[in-house]
Image (cartoon, rainbow, N blue to C red; front, side):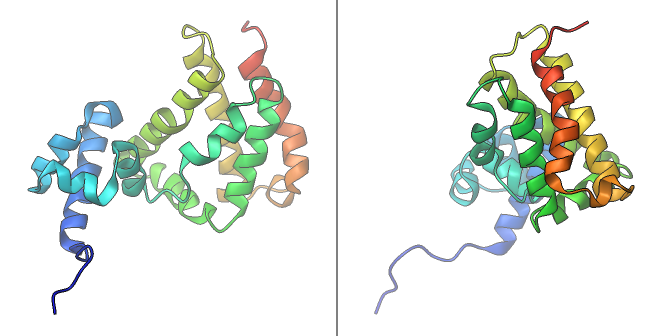
Length: 196
């Protein structure tokens, strides 16, 4: 009797695609890498890349071993608009990092401090998956958006370093709502107040 349904995927093919994608994203960035180039480098048809991973965003997230899809989480933060965005962003950030999903993110940030490849991938993740979404969703002035979003990123990466990697007290054990209360106004100011 013939088997029906989709054949199980070949793990070697999947890994070859991921390895080619990691290389492409690290060398050319998210925008410069294409599914066709990645497929050629992996020795597969581009349709197979789409079969395993779907769109380029999903492939990128797979190369990062991302614990969540920003496309699913960030609309809750940015879509309501600028009013209260600092609070929503810090609350989401702390909830992800405080959860088991935060463990791979901590590992990625630690690795980014020591390895150029990890630093490039983290930078591409921040720019392509988070900062651009913020710029579009919040309708930030294109001339000011790079400054505003990089200031936000500096605050959040600083928070991550001190709370989750260096574990500096009292920030390391501070209740999440307290972290939100202290950090959110700065994020809000970076995104909404007039720039100096």
